[in-house]
Amino acid sequence: MSKRRLSLKDLAKELNISISTVSRALKNHPDISVELTRRVQELALEKNYTPNPLAMGLLRQETRMIGVIVPDLVTHFYSSIISGIEEYAKSQGYFILLASSDENLQKEIESVSNLLKARVDGMIVCLSKETDRFEHFKQLVENEIPLVFFDRVCLTESVPSVVVDNRHAVEQIIFHLQEQGFKRIAFISGPSHLNISSERIEGYYSGLTKSGLSSDPDLLRSCNMHPDEAVRITDELLSLSDPPDAIFGINDLMIFAVMKELRQRGISIPSEIGVVGFADDFHATFVTPQLTSVMHPTRKIGIKAAELFFMKMANSGYNEKVVLQTQLVIRESSSRKKKL
Image (cartoon, rainbow, N blue to C red; front, side):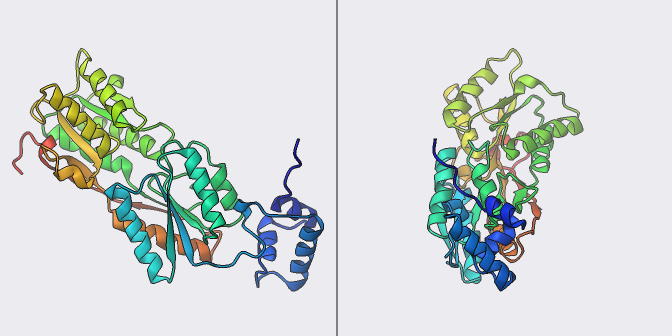
């Protein structure tokens, strides 16, 4: 069995000081006295302390680079947010280094490690759809490496984040569909461990209640956010004895798959079934009928995430959750009563 690597926590315990003090002393931080810095560094040398990639290094220098990890680099949603991050970072004399998790937890963990090896000054992250454990981020927090989350978030008790008001956004979808005469509204949600799923489910139930519509557990389905899964769920919904007359999804990609399946079945949108997306992808206006969707303030999300990052850099104890509002963009796919 291999010997456990000596950690910052071990050094802190032996010297009876905090982990953050040890971390700063190893970096020759000016706030730590010369004497205490000497004691910490001598103990680290005596104990053969060698930091792992997550703890950075004794000689870590500022690189003026921010690591940014997103689930993919293709969709307009993420590319627009990245542009906002880059714009603000550049105004502060910083650059960004991009990595994609490809919606995969293991690749996300590898991306964190690789960005640390590239000596970024910290990270701005949107979780992958598979991320249901957070040790790779907890280690960043413990080592006071600046970290900010956006959209899909975790560790909000210690990490600043930028999100949208998902509950309110879904309530607006329900209100709109109810006004258009839809009564049996189905929601294809995402993995239950994601905050965007739980928050939108809350909005689904509260929207139904406020609209005077009854809820049916058969109309709420979770998926792995793959188009094939959305097609399977659509088939199940249409096979119900009392099928839905409207469907909305966790994102536009899921709803594009739903629309394709409905067309193949000869089901008219929106006269027979109304559909609504989430995120207002660039392609929303290129499908037929044009897709009603929830538009996110993507550039603002990126700018705000970068602002929080620099606040976190200046104050390791800083923690704020910024909640931004969305806009329901009504198009043909859900409009029975109103001309656009």
